[in-house]
Length: 287
Image (cartoon, rainbow, N blue to C red):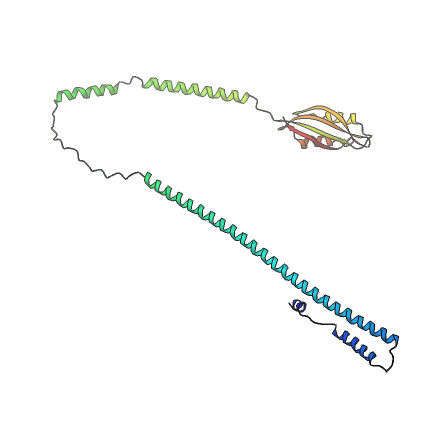
């Protein structure tokens, strides 16, 4: 704030310099009577030129400060106007968003009201309570049956209970069916046990690396193929150059996963320490 105040205030900071120059000028002019010398004239002219230059500099500085202050004020005003316009645009956007939200809420409320009305209209009407109707009372008459006819009916029922036409045959058939079913289940279990299951196998490509270029690669391959295990079948092999005259043995094999593992296979190959430096798995595929 102080700098802005001094920019707008017209102050002559170097006035003492020009006062000293003016004082020296008048002292030289009021010297001894007589014709002035050339040195005095030159000094006076230089002083006057200095005074004129100082006045021009003061005017320029005042004009520059006024222009900078005016340009700064104009820049601040432009920035303020741009910020106000930006806020107005944001306000308009917010108003449009609020209007959209209000419209969506209004639609949702209308839909909810429609659903509530439809649900109330589709509700089943309550069933009116039924009146209990008592049956007509019919006077019952006692009917007496002759005793002679009731006795033969009881005798016939006793005879039917004593006769069992299918009881023993059904029990024998159930026993025979159970034996046949057990026999068939036993045969099926034996047949299923004899049927071989699916054997999981894997194809492995091994990289067997020698110690140096002087290692006998044929002997090393012979040692590797001398490994025999249940579920292990050796395949094709080839020599692959590594560098500096050294070659590695790349050999294929097929193993059964339940019988042969990669760790056991690597241990068996690395036992030939005179020829084998290390074993790596180059490829592993399920069959």
